[in-house]
Length: 391
Image (cartoon, rainbow, N blue to C red; front, side):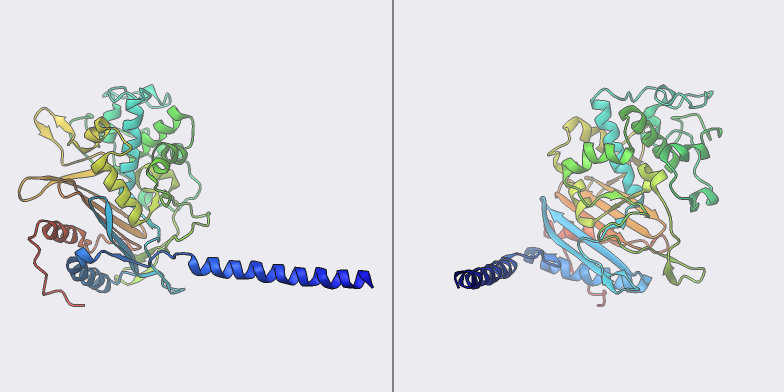
């Protein structure tokens, strides 16, 4: 009899325990705050709504599947949202957290790590490349480290076959074989000539000197510190949360799924994935220098001098620009198969814009510069709505 009573009591206790756990779970779920699908600061509502229509119009006109856009002012995120689809086949909407290929903006990350290693004394900007890679062929004109980051090395660009190769699991060091033994186009330092090969060579040297994989060096030195947790290598064999599908255009300009590509062997030049909000974090760091030193930022944001009296408009992965009233601002641009990205930084207004898409948009330039300019005008009290843009 006592055993039967004990069993009944134990059963009731078990039921009450289950009910208590269930109730607490429900209460916790109800109290948990969900992140908003989009951020729109009411203070900037006028300029946001006008440019929101412009962004959607551009996507529709360009048959662009999906994109994400983020804007910050004085370090605060005032606009962030996704448009269209991250996957058309499965009707997965693009969001604030969708990861896109950022193409050449990857070079900004590589340059920042390079300047960190200069500060640490691990690299010398005036050292020859062969100082760090012993298997580099001896050339008539030495290629210095600064020539790589300033894009004045004389190294050629990839040809169409190399640029579109679909090989998998190539390492950064293995990728150097495509150009290592080729002649230089001109003596290093004479001209500026943009090529991903120069940045890939710089990445291989960073790996060699640090004794670790390039992506781990970048994560440890930069991404983890800046809280850019959504900026990762585009590994086609890995399951990457929130990664978009990638799209391309066929010979009659129709949108199709892009050919599968493995960009890890050119990771330093154009192989990263990121989100618009992560790129905004990067832009704000270039403005405020909360983590990176002032000397490092000065090196990044100063136009490289090619020859005495001749400064370049590009370098360090950035484009150096001026407003109509003579104030400096910066941009970075990326286009690869299946993706495009734009980062715009106005230090004077403390304004940063990032826009990313899942289609190579070289045929139809993103109107990100106009949107950033509209925000700048709004901040300065000069904004005039564009009445010609239709929803």
